[in-house]
Image 1 (cartoon, helix red, strand yellow):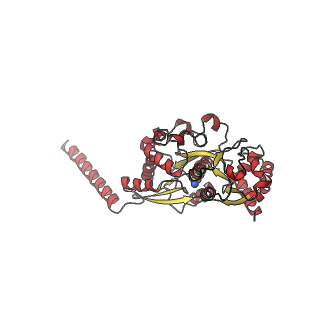
Image 2 (tube, rainbow, N blue to C red):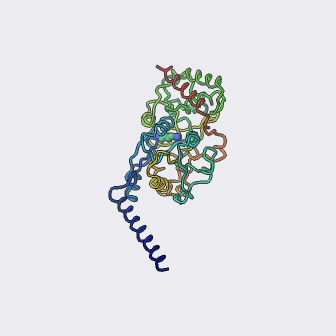
Image 3 (spheres, rainbow, N blue to C red):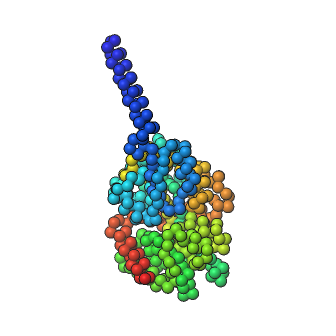
Amino acid sequence: MKNLVRFFLVIAVSSALILIAISSLNSSQGYSGGNTLTVYNWGDYIDPALIKKFEKETGIKVIYETFDSNEAMMTKIQQGGTTYDVAVPSEYTIDKMRHENLLIPLDYTKLPNLKNIDKRFMDLPFDPDNQYSVPYFWGTVGIVYNPSKLNGKKITSWNDLWAPDLKNEILLIDGAREVMGMGLNSLGYSLNDTNKEHLLEAKNKLDTLTPNVKAIVGDEIKMLMANEEASIGLVWSGDASEIMSENEHLDYVVPKEGSNLWFDNMVIPKTAKNIDGAQKFINFMLDPKVAAQNTEYVGYSTPNKAALKFLPKDVVNDKRFYPSPELTKKLEVYENLGKKNLAYYNELFLQFKMHRK
Ligand code: N2P
């Protein structure tokens, strides 16, 4: 009996010693990935003060990198050369990534703040049960425009953009699904159409828009539109809200033929080294006050229901940026159309861009 007690005592003492050794290792030199966290996000998509706050609260140092398209982000993660601990893809890319085993399932015990998210944004078809992703921002695709430069004319339809008097007046966001989607929607086709003839027809129609297109740009579209360098822009809703806070002459519309409803969620890619830190970061971003601060800074719409009370009433009551579920039901969410079809969308978009030169 005595021997047995001694045996357990030895085990207990030595495991305690091992634990102490590990934790001192963590705090002194940091074990692989322990004290840094690499976050990979869209450009202009976080309040930098929040990164500082997270670093201060957790002692984890954040390395922050940005991308400007789902395609570029996914290629980087597939290549695997860089350690990304958290990334923020959109819905169709999340679906693609989980099918290609590029994501690590989330540990819900480490995400108590998930309760703050509006149920409306949970359990969507691209990630059933949110096994791999949790909501970050959401919105629509539409047209930001300057009525004072259009003789007071209101834009309501995609086809309004083809008017001959809009020569050189349009800026387009540099997104294959967004631009091809505009072509498809203007013809009455779905944003998820995979019929090659329809896709080609959409691309040919886009070619006829070329005289009106001033440039195809990235995040600088916000500055250009706010400075009235063009009178019409194809944008994501959050960019429109940001532009409109800079220039009150502008308005935003989701064209009547329909448009895209999108969701950007946080995920932990397979390349992650600091999974625990990634969970901490995700949970931090889900905190209502943090989400509200981020929303005010970035201008996009938050899926965080508990954050709404910390935001100005005129922001959350603006139906242009917080459309009702009845309205969003009429919009289409991009689907993962499979490798071949997505490649065809990208190829046609590239051809359209070349056509302009
Ligand atoms: C932020 C871009 C948001 C992308 N600059 C919308 N999915």
